[in-house]
Image (cartoon, rainbow, N blue to C red; front, side, top):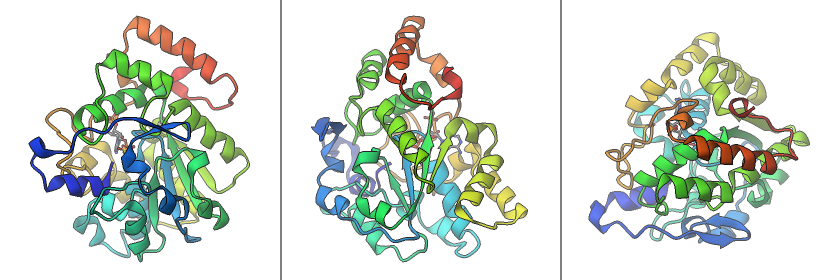
Length: 307
Ligand code: PPS
């Protein structure tokens, strides 16, 4: 998830990793300092009109969509790109900041590709205004809350640069309370959904739809972006971005990152819809559903696995 942090940590043996960061309240959103230390530069970031912002709540399918977009734009023009740089270098993570390493904003500024693909996990109210002024296109991916929480839990277990997850029960409670890095899932997905209603340049996608029919979702992305990739190209891309292929692909699976311990849990973990059923107890599920109804009562946003 975190480029500079990853390269930072890759030079340290695990026992000398920096301590896990604490959650802090940042303008009402839970964060860690890794995403707030560069705040002025993030807010003043100068987007370019052709930039494409890939926005997600963490663990919603960011890497999947990043890889699809990277292939759609560059697999023909720059075939070497796919084997020479990991995905987290091709698609900078805007808000990341680690001392003595290029920040996400610096990395994005250094890109000469057109378009630039830029990743963010920021909630809608924190997106730098330049992206709106320059009328950039945004691809937002949402994932159902239960699977999103499960994926986040396993990620925090294996990623030393995330806060300690604690046990599953306390993690789930924290998820429901919105005390996660990048804040409340409920606020994130609904905030972007409401903005999309009045903003034609936001393409709002669902992880579950991508699992059901990746080819269909690639076609929708092409329509949104005005791309004229051939059927053959799209079929090739569809094949490359299937879970098993991405899991084997060192440039897409984060295996080069020492701050993650794949022995605890791999980054490309299961890639499924409905894995929450293997984690939630009956009581947790009932409590979650009840709370979900209250938190989501004012939105038209619907997730297929929760209705
Ligand atoms: S991050 O750290 O926020 O950037 O993580 P993100 O990439 O958003 O989410 C990681 C989860 O997405 C799954 N994934 C996929 N699922 C199906 N098919 C493909 N191709 C694919 N690529 C990534 C990944 O396995 C993580 O989900 P879980 O449920 O943990 O497996």
